[in-house]
Amino acid sequence: MGKFRITPSGPLKGKIKIQGSKNAALPIMAAAALHDGFTIIKNCPRIKDVDNMALLLTDLGCRVFWQNQMLVIDAKDINKTVLNENISSKFRASILLLGAMVGRCNNVTVYTPGGCKIGARPIDLHIKAMTELGVLVDVKDNVLKAACDKLVAGNIIFSQKSVGATQNAILAAVFAKGKTVIKNASKEPEVKALIDALVIMGADIDITHFEDNIIEINGVSQLYDSVVEVVPDRIVLGTYMGAVLLCGGTVLFENCDIKLTRGYLDILVGMGLKVSEDENGGLLATADTRIQAIRLIKTGPYPEFPTDLQSVIMGLLSVAQGKSTLVEKVFENRLSMAKVLNDMGADIIVNNEYAYIRGVEKLRAVTAKTTDLRMAAALIIICLIATDESIIEDEYIFRGYEDIVGDLNKLGAKVLYDEAEAT
Ligand code: EPZ
Image (cartoon, rainbow, N blue to C red):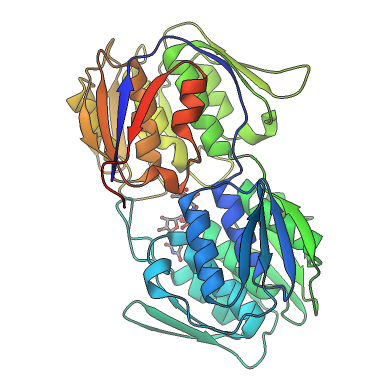
């Protein structure tokens, strides 16, 4: 558990690079386990979830090491098919080793990363995907055993969209003999990032109908040593663009292009952010007026508004001019930050998945504890405009944000971090 001390900040100014995407790096690391050789991952973010995925892979027999900002994974000597329970229970993405290890070894024991504060997070869709590929799956308590003699291509039709289940289906189908068709697949950029990496590694994946949520995988017999690159993190970018809207100022996001903002740019612009593509590359974001309310925002599967930015938007709307309704349609319990904002003087009424927000002029400083990493990031940037210094106690944020303190302070903010006790 660590403590952030946030001092009210004036306008943000300067330029920063956005880290590699957590939710693209993790499935790509799982994909490395498919291949009995080297996979070099460029622009991999140095975050706790990546460290824990690296520990899981090492425990399975891989060699994993950093070479500058590149993560090198040598998965030649995988000699185990039972995941380390303690490590895998620390983060949801450990479930992605289900598809990768079924693909590599036709056999794996994983621990279902149970629910968390934002929702129950079941894995029924992951199990369905494996079953459609001829895998026998047995779940007892939190232990999931999956095995098959031979992977067979299948038709997977998801009853609802799931990023992780789509990724697991793709990973398990890479070596499945024949053509696997996934329908109602998720098409988040992080699914596309996994596909792009696998194709570089030698997989045969057809995304002709990707916009219609259809992915087709023709089984291959092997993959090859490859170098793949992680895209910038669109959620970290959206978080910092939110900070510009809150504090005002002008920031250049050097390694980002407009495509990264699909699904949320229109909302931020509607609130008053000005965004342009800089002639030297990168995205320039400017704000100099009070945030404007947006009447209705609903989160949903890509390209709808991303649930991972919902906490940031709630903070922005809490000080906007006007009333807004925010609807969280993806996770059943992800509006809990409203309580903290109301302690700061916000005016938010939560009813099930609806948050009714009437913007106020000012927010008081707060001392609060976080319950998930996206809420942690949202609270830190919202405290930049509180009337006094705030204290945020948190144990999640470094799972997903490489250096939020350094990034914000580079732009003129005053954020201190004190690792009160080692986690
Ligand atoms: C991924 O989680 C992301 N995590 C989440 O980001 C993100 O919020 C989420 O996708 C939605 O975009 C990673 O990529 C590591 P889902 P995932 O399966 O795959 C239900 C962050 O902060 N569902 O798309 O677990 C589920 O309960 C994290 O970076 C089932 O019912 O999300 C949810 O309501 C938070 N059965 C909905 O689907 C299943 O088998 C979407 O979940 C699987 C999911």
